[in-house]
Image (cartoon, rainbow over all chains, first blue to last red):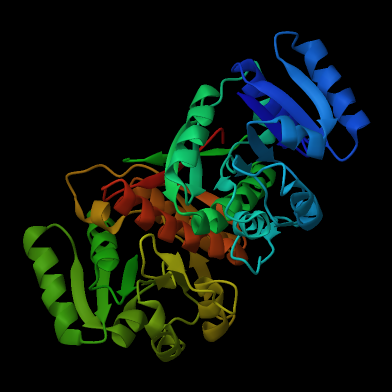
Length: 215
Length: 215
């Protein structure tokens, strides 16, 4: 399966590229700048010759991928997602975004649609299956390949089959996937990211995650 | 230390009364109806003769307690908290409330003040120290005294000393207290309750809780 990571040159994108690449998925790293995507893809490939990764422009990456992961800043969502509308038709789109408001601790901006994932779903329309996931896994930990990943990832979405595909991906990189419910639950997942960033600052840590007990 | 549990005749109130009573705190169980408070207090006392518990009207309970826990429905907050304003002066007030909107899964109502805890803080004013806690511990598990409590409780508040008092209480009943930051973070704690209720429904469980990893 080819996984496209849109806006994949940031820490979350690079981390997912590495872990999913190591798990055997073929990675298409997308960026607004194809050149930058190529540079980062080459950099990751040099350090990890066993992964299959290619740097591309966002639209080309989305066109070529079987499943699309979005790791784009909230402020770029309207423009970027609209451009990808055609390319993601019929595919699973995994949103990892948060409308973060910086601060100590950070908070999240109120998204009129309810959550960033719902906003993306509204832009894309029903022809792609939007799934919200990977909000509680630290980008830092994803990139530290010598460290084992622990913790759960909550998965929200309105399409059960799409959630199952994402659950398998999560398991392959060491996370326990937990179905958190319909896409509207994503607001809580997104708030958890801001909580964890705040706790990392407070406790001077980098990789705080979440596990659910008595489940 | 005498702990008053306001609106303490519900499941969360009874559960906290039992666990804190077992931990050696003296419990003042408050209700709008003193008679109902007395009935529940007697019922708990009969099954657990080692706990010290008394049923009282909410205001009397708040007057007599050294620390106040609120386990009241969101819809009663305006009226109940306003009535307690004088009684809680100079005390720590622990809010456990959530503006829950029923559903499968449930969600939370948007509170204009940012969170229920901030709303309570606005009503009470600066003379009491509001701390938000106990949002991720299942009322069911609290009442099952044969089961050990596991998991973390996030603690939010603007007064460090008050948070430390609540942290000690949490530890005494088996929870790991984690400082989540200022009171404004409570919105996330409150959303976590709704997430956990939804997950309990989805996974057919009763006591799902949360633990933070890599901390």
